[in-house]
Image (cartoon, rainbow, N blue to C red; front, side, top):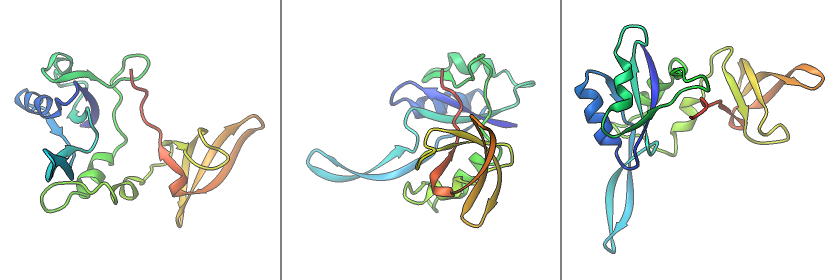
Length: 174
């Protein structure tokens, strides 16, 4: 089964999670511990790692997934431009879950590196340097670098960049 992104209504991640689980879906709501000032005092609070988003796993051919749209707390299932439910890259949720501490929370300061495992053919966006904003196709890793195939005006070009300069291209939100 694949994992999909669900956009929740503001501050309703837990309501959506509860209701989707009641419908039999496998749901993942990544959270982290934060320190905030509440009523002039420091307090430990639990925050969603991706505010207004949760993840749900289902088989698009077998499960009754269209009920997700009308679930209390859910805004919508994130889809591509043609309204097709877009699965996350394989291994993304597993890598995210593997980064949880003993209490089940993520550490926002060390999670990005673990999620930067790409598969051949993944669409990657360059987020730093002279090629910022350009997307390419992941070819392979080389030590701390990634090798991408870019389609530029002159044709297809292979570039090698540090991992920290790229990110997995997110599905288009609608």
